[in-house]
Amino acid sequence: LIVSGFPPPQVKCYDLSQLSMKWSRHLDAEVVTFQALSEDYAKLAFICADRSIRFHAKFGNYYQTRTPKQGRDLVYSRNTGDLCVVGSSSEVWRLNLEQGRFLAPLESQCEEFNVCGISPTHGLFAAASADGELECFDLRQRKSCGLIQCTDADEGGLTSLRFDSNGMNVAVGSEGGIVRLYDLRSSRPVRVKDQMNGFPIIDLKYHNSVDGVRRLVSTDKKIVKIWDERTGDPYTSIEPGYEINDLCMWDNTGLMMLAMEHTEMSVFFTPTLGAAPKWCSFLENLTEEMEEQKNETIYDDYRFVTVEELDKLGLSHLIGTKMLRAYMHGYFMDNRLYGKAKAIAEPFSYDDFKKKKVKEKLDEERKSRITVKKKAPKVNALLAARLGTADAEGVVDDVDEDGDDVGTIAPGGSLLEDDRFAAMFKEKEFEIDEEDEQYKVLHPNAPKLHKDTRREILEDHFELVSDEDDVPVEEVTTTKKKTSSEPKMYAAKDEFHANAFKDGRVTKADLPLKERAKMERANEKTKQARVTGNREAFFDAGDKDKMKRLGESKNSDKYGDEEGLTAEGAWKDQAKGHSRGSRRGMDGVLGKQKIVGGRPVKGKRGKK
Image 1 (cartoon, helix red, strand yellow):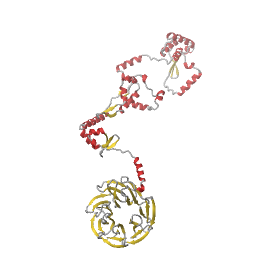
Image 2 (cartoon, rainbow, N blue to C red):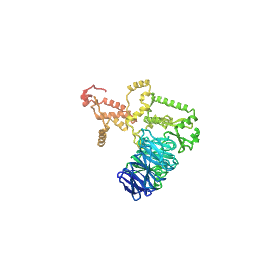
Image 3 (cartoon, rainbow, N blue to C red):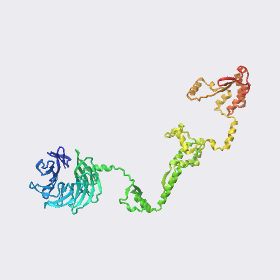
Image 4 (cartoon, rainbow, N blue to C red):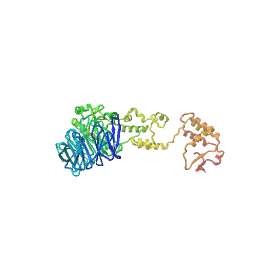
């Protein structure tokens, strides 16, 4: 591999078998282009920017000569031994390397040339002009064979030229980024391909792939495009990121090298174009590792069908073709093909589709209507609301064997409607207390709902009503009248408090000091409600022992040790015993006092 660069003007040779640089040489002027005259690096010819042609051998610079005008391109004819050079002149200079002298130049109808080429099959020489003309010469007769106008006036001149290996086709590229393929027997282009960038075509190369398809590689300073020569279909494109100066590609392989406006060359390998060359066979291992890391392909426009569905649709004969892509236990097929086959196989499916759409529309309209909410159960209302939510969200679409939609209902709805679990929402024995410690231990991951969240859940599913709403209006009025006249009944907390009330003693005063101190601390921790407004209290100033004995005798005779002693009954008997007490002491002097608003007020004596 031989590479030239600037600055400084130099040439480097790489030994690909060793993957290393063999030698490097510096020149006096920038290299415009060069040509290898032998199969190795023993004979090289360079066109430099100082109008000179330099010949190099293995050891270095061998000979140097100059051209009348600046040269732009050169090509070597192995049949005649002539080195043809074109440039900013209407003449084609011929330097015979066997005789070592210039021969008579070829006269042309064009003013100047940009590039030239020679057919490896029959030796026809062609030169592309800056005016967009392509002129061919027969080196045996040293005269023009023909001339065709390839480009328009606005498109510019021709910048690249390449003959096909079969000797019948030639490809040219213009300054406007358009590639034209010509048959040498016709002046009309066989195919026109636009590079779509507007940059001049730098190089054109024919490439033979391992799949037997012949492709054309067109290069401008931004992108490399590979496309089919016969159809013009694009195969792939490469954008290296720097301006491209030249392209080198190996036949029957997928390896290419790009010389760019950068200190390093870029190497690209396309396995589908061909295998890697022998000197870099390790690239095959790299590509195999990359193929193992395949990404999952998402088929958005495809439908998955099984073999049974293909038989029903009558498309089983497509198995093995490009219309079906094998995947798992079925195939992927295009949605459009599936729709057409479905319409033919099931002509009445449109009616089912129409009914389904009408049903969906009616369901949407029903959602906007006012729905009747059920009354919340007396027990486990929050659980019922949760089951209702699961019932609403737990309907999963399913399809039976006939293709009809069947709803799979979540277990929540069946639990609410099942009579076996009716007592769970009626009797308090089955009430679930989520604040209980045992419930928290059994359900550590249960969600902790805020009070407002619970209320919202209940309001979404049930109509919150009081217990009086279940009773007719007439019964409510009658019960209110009855309950207003009857006295309120109070049940004693336990036997200890009942006996204490019978004895007329304050239980707190009878407790030891230690227990009373504990009760005081507990009362201080709890928040006490503040009572406002006027207060009223009565007191009797009598003999304490006598009153106590009188109360004990009456209470023991009347109530005994019966269970269910009411506080009101005990209070009434206690009041009767106090009404006949002695009038000694303060009772005799002051009588019964009444305190209103913290001030003593004299009241009437007698029964309360």
